[in-house]
Image 1: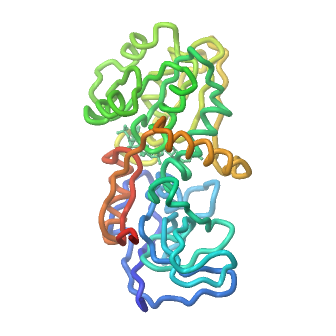
Image 2 (image 1 turned 30 degrees about the horizontal axis):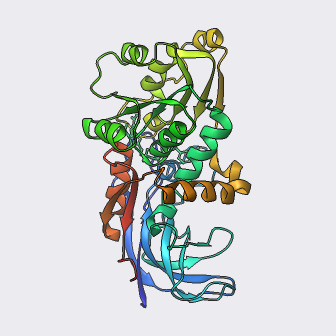
Image 3 (image 1 turned 180 degrees about the horizontal axis):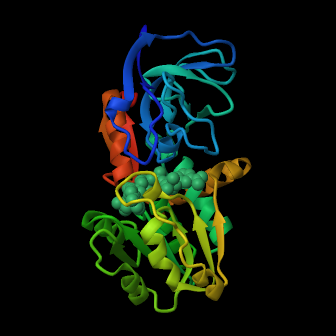
Length: 341
Ligand SMILES: NC(=O)c1ccc[n+]([C@@H]2O[C@H](COP(=O)([O-])OP(=O)(O)OC[C@H]3O[C@@H](n4cnc5c(N)ncnc54)[C@H](OP(=O)(O)O)[C@@H]3O)[C@@H](O)[C@H]2O)c1
């Protein structure tokens, strides 16, 4: 293992156009030896996440972006092949920041061991990773669901949304999914066990459809979409509704043109709703609590998760493109090596 393949960013991608393979370079480079406090790892799964669109944009963001010529950022599940970090040994399965590469270095504070006896290793990037933790804290701490509440979730079949819908059901809520294809609707109803689901891409009158499914209003609106889907939900907020702004997928890419999310503040006034933005990193000090609870639900069979897995490091830009256009169901990953036996 003397050579590494890695994707670097050619130049920041401005505007709302979709990034393509042409925006990245696949480079071959030598493998670095770990310094004190580092582990050298072989990537198994790379995580594809919507926040990556923001990292390659020159626009202002909550985190520093990737500069031209730099390794594309991202988390991975990987196997340790050399360690100069106390407590980590070759053969350990770990997760942490690695970037889009086959072999590389991980270091604290992000590197963490994965207990593969408790859950499949890929779940460390999905249900037991940032998406699951986002769902857990954003729904429970900001959404404050109560038994009997109606909870509406956008991007409902994705990595975050699939967990939100299931956790809301465990909390005794009525759940409504909004997702972008007939196959996703079937998955939401049959496997994720949402009580009702709407395909927003084919529904001719989304506002009316939501009104039919939630005649007493939406108590918790968990939104990852923004734009026209967000606007269609606002007239149906129940009194004292909680609106959780988890993401704005419609503004990351050009599938649906960027639109003002809140065009009629009267809906918030009449419902006396609270609107709260969420950032997972604000809850880092409680991640162990979230992982432990999610892991228990997963082992008990109370939560289900699915992955869409592209094969090979060459597929990383295409996998990001697929995520941003909604081709994924569940967590989008890229597998770059076989899981060790
Ligand atoms: N705030 C935080 O700390 C935090 C942390 C993690 C994730 N997030 C956010 O959570 C959301 C979901 O992330 P994820 O990793 O679980 O991704 P995901 O839901 O697995 O994948 C993204 C999904 O977004 C939907 N989508 C794509 N274009 C859309 C559009 N124009 N309008 C509406 N929806 C569109 C697609 O589903 P459909 O086909 O069903 O539309 C797509 O499958 C994202 O907005 C992400 O930024 C926030």
